[in-house]
Image (tube, rainbow, N blue to C red; front, side):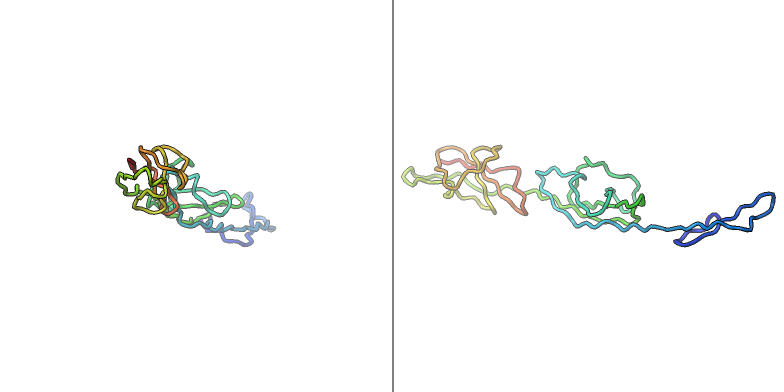
Length: 182
């Protein structure tokens, strides 16, 4: 029957002409390839990464990403990742896309600013960046809210503003706390 599901193995075809079926049959060898899902792990990004589908990693060939385990519309590479969302990867080997897909849960860390108050020092103290106090982890100090160059701990303080960020889960916060030094 034409609705018979094929499995790997040999099938034999005959031909019927003028109501007569051929005596000889042609062997057709069928190999059904079961492409496995790629391998992938849950992945973490920083909010500053502006991560997209293109940033997801799976091990396999010709990886395609989907919104669900059964969706048929491949996600575009420039689709922004959403915190707490699962994405599903297939792989294609020898022209056969895997039926099963690897699920990848995405976590996007949004590191908050550290807590700090304005601070005062005496000029005789020769205070440096190392003397500044902010509550948080892995504090970095900058001379502006947008500077990309971290100040050395030996930088001598002057009156004015300094900006503190903190880093959690290997993600430096995108916003900074301003501390006014007198």
